[in-house]
Length: 116
Image (tube, rainbow, N blue to C red; front, side):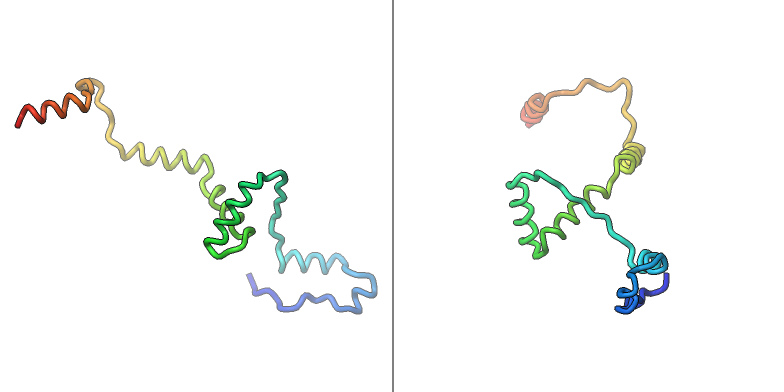
């Protein structure tokens, strides 16, 4: 994509003449894409205090901290996690059907002591 022009091409005279037209809006959408916004109501004060403290510890704003939290939360959708778990499971050796019963740790420790 080409670089964004430095100045939005709407002059004061055009604004006085009637404001933006369809071409101005199309230009703005092409060169200045909108970012999504979220408004979250009724956040517990303790949660906000903790997030402000985390942001201050990192030397960033609360807004930047919240953006990072949301980005990390959205980073691994459920389907990606399921695929990752399946890949790990495929690398794990299969269980034997007829294996010896599991023994308690206490029994193993006692055997180790008895061998001495």
